[in-house]
Length: 324
Image (cartoon, rainbow, N blue to C red):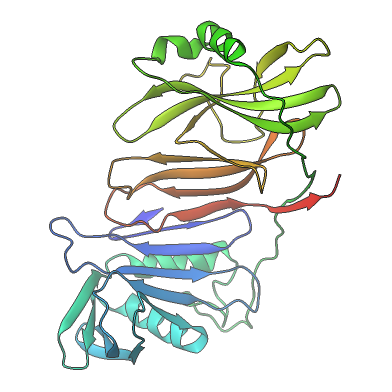
């Protein structure tokens, strides 16, 4: 959800994040401003400000020229973090202003951000979290005692895999690539990779990332799971995902991930799709392997290509890796 120069979103656990977008034109002094509030009655907002030239010493935050907060920037610090009462005070001040400036002790400008839309963004957070009309709201204050919605996130209990050295041979991967719908997207030099998924009920399993085309900054992979038979032959099937992994078209049966990466330690695969080379918009996801399919654990989105690298979380799950 975007309100003028601010965009906002919440995840399935009702943790919400509002982000300042950079203005049209040069971004040299554009600050990154993020207001985050977790779900739950006791959760308080956090305001994080970054994107300024690191300069140790005192700072002041000015909203429409008036000092709202001050403090010290530690040597080497890249972010100013405000919590609890200070964060609420600043968030409410932001909602009443039109522009934010960060200045040093001498009054020199370290950065600025537009506040157009921040009030609506924070009011949206109050509403989603069930705080609107209560004393616990940031913007949508009311006379009722503080309230907040309660929710839980999925808990994924999966068996930890024990990787083996049984992987598909080169001829098996060549045969897969030649018979895959990805074949028509493969040009020039290509590279396919295989990773062990340990042993399933029928024997050795493997994950295959099959090159399925590339652009200037996004590299697509078709995701397959291989099963080794007792006679040593490999059979491949498109990997199964519970949410989020789709093909190039609605009728595609091959899940495609962008800039895919496998992390054996967490037995998770990730995707990172940039809307443009700058990386200030796009989406990212991670899934954990549960022995038969990939299950979504994290997802972030930034729908606005306006200079922010603070992508908004929209899904999370707790993963418990159980010993075999």
